[in-house]
Length: 155
Image (cartoon, rainbow, N blue to C red):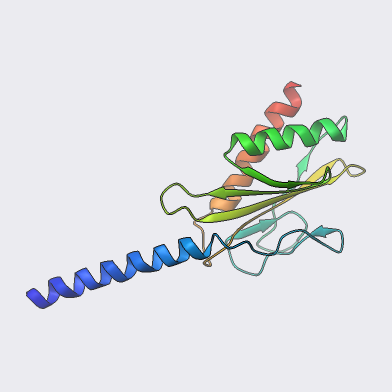
């Protein structure tokens, strides 16, 4: 019985140690930015979505807008920060923001690219560590889309 308790305690400690390690590792910045004028493709793991990767499981619809691109960009930024994103870089047509999970403080990257001529804002959201994310990045983009539509159409 004592051995079983020790094994359980060791397994719990090992699990906690792994989560702490991953949390610390996720705080190291990953490569972001445009690649050949577009958002980077996803690495092939289910913890990433991108609107410029059509035909793959990682694909997600971009944000669409009508009217002035500058106003749409501002609405997208407002929606992003309302969701809890911290804007790290904004060049006017490219934006990189970070999100932290509540409990373990894992860091995810979210990027936007304005295509003014196409009247879309492309989006990429990815976890920095692990392979799965329980759909967190896809849900984040869908919440962003809903907030963006509310802000943009209400303007």
